[in-house]
Image (cartoon, rainbow, N blue to C red; front, side, top):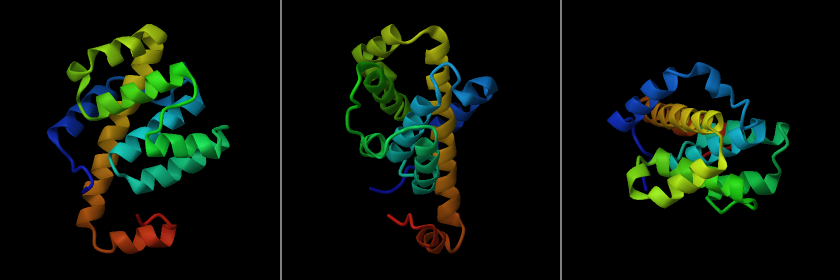
Length: 154
C-alpha cells in the first residue's frame, strides 16, 4: 500500500485545524493521549518520520513502549476511553465519520466538548501534516536515504 498523498481531504483537515491553534497542545486530553493519537494517525497515513519523532516524544511524556506499539499497529487500547479516542482518530483520519455513527457516538459520550474538540483538531492537524510530509518526501530526491539515516526506512 502506498502512502496517502496530499488530497482535498487533507487540505480541508488543515483548514479545520487552523481555526483552533490552542487545541493543538491537547491540554484537556493530556500529553500522553495526544501522542498516542498522533501515532495512530501517523500510522494510518504511513508517515514514518512523524511516527519516529512522536514515538520518542510519547516516551518522554510517559507512554510505555507497549502503548507506542499499540498505537502504531492499530491494536485496541487497554482502557475504554483511550480505545474510543483512537478508534475515532482512525475514523476521522480516513474521513468516514458518517460510516461509523455508533463509534462516533461512543467517543462523544466519553469525552467533554473541549476534549472532543482537541481530539478532532489534533487528528485534523496531523492528517494534513502527515500527508504533506509524505508528498514532500516523494518529491525531494534522497528521501529514502534520509529515512535510512534516521533509522526509519520502512
